[in-house]
Amino acid sequence: MISASLYFIQERLLFLPTVLEKDYKFSFNYNFEEINLEATDGAKLNALHFKVENPKGVILYFHGNSGDLSRWGTVAEFFVEKQYNVLIMDYRTYGKSKGKLNQDVFYEDAEMFYSYLKSQYKESQIAVYGRSLGTGIATYVASRNNPSKLVLETPYYSIEDVAQSRFPMFPVRLFLKYKFPTYQFIGSVTCPITMFHGTEDIIIPYRSAQKFYEEAPKDFTEFVKIESGNHNNLSNFSLYQHHIKILFP
Image 1 (cartoon, rainbow, N blue to C red):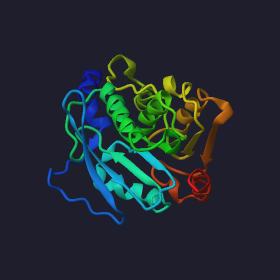
Image 2 (cartoon, rainbow, N blue to C red):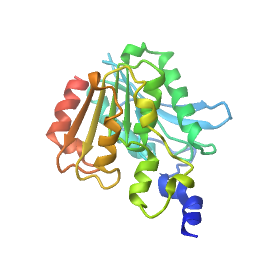
Image 3 (cartoon, rainbow, N blue to C red):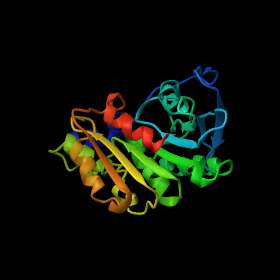
Image 4 (spheres, rainbow, N blue to C red):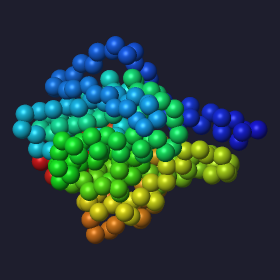
């Protein structure tokens, strides 16, 4: 009975969107363009494209599982102030984005936004950045394209792996609709990869990130272990800031 209940409420456990009205006006400290792309099934996807004078490159940013662009746009400004353009989308049901959810559309929608950037930038100018839930989507995109780098903040082996650690008494693999098998994609990534994970992360266990790292190409993958870091505070640590300065000088 409990397993059946988990099956029907899993979307509410995994996805925590907030919704914005169609006429909501975004406000940030940097110039941006609000864009809307239409998926093949007609779903409308909302995004923000931050633009600076003489950008050093562009970052395609995939955010975590809660909130909307009114919050995540502020997070993206961390990179805009470093003189990078940033494109950040809201997933379906988040913010102003519409459409039905399933695992495949996360990947398809992300590819659509990568293609959008490729029409304006060389791939050597594009970096892909994923945070939390977005690390699985970012890894998929990088595995199918040739960006300059892939940066993953609090990555996971798979959502199935994370869910099993949270509900160890249940056979979650039997009823989980959203498995996000990130480990299946990382081996096909050919650009430099940097992973950040905190040892005190209780949302995505450090063990899951380590397990994921073992599947990555070792010649060009760096795993940055942040002692005492948790799921939401890695940017506060000097070790994170040091590596970000190297990745995005």
